[in-house]
Image 1 (tube, rainbow, N blue to C red):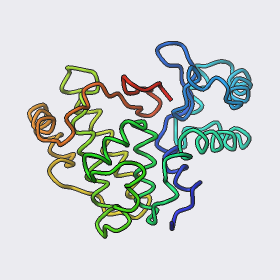
Image 2: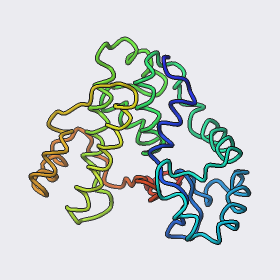
Image 3: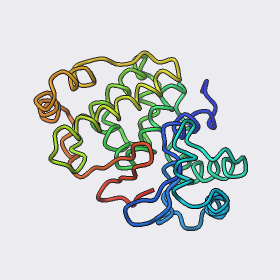
Length: 240
């Protein structure tokens, strides 16, 4: 794999927001929710940093600009260790031979959860996490197919809102995330019908409705996602 594990993880963490408080009052940092990660030793560091900055409001402001980080090396190290343990391990990422593919699949799992990754692999490659490496590694067009599959996946999401404008904005944000990962790894961005952000922007709700109807992903109505620190999850999985 041309990209190292930590490089791939960092690409995803760069997409995540900084410090925040979720709707239930739990602390969130880089997509890690304290309610579901109470044993993470990073919270002790975060608590000290928040206190030194003068409270949660100041902490949110301090991490509201790229790279959306406190810039604390101990916290960064603890975060990487946690992400490897909870997200990287057990999902066969080390079995993919192309780091560009691995970066997209890892980011999808971190953003959409294990259920989201399973859905993408099954719908687009007729594969499970166990069988996907063999199938994808043998496909010379795998990178573009994974990018296309991710955007098709997001195009079907209703984001738990009936507001078509919000759906449009959330979907465009998800597309940008995929394209950011593609750009960072030197992958050509997919610009087909399902994934074309301009279609959403120019045609508004009608284009969104058409994408919702035409996407191969037909079981996505209960899916939420993170976007820059706004924590969401699938209805069947804990917030992570």
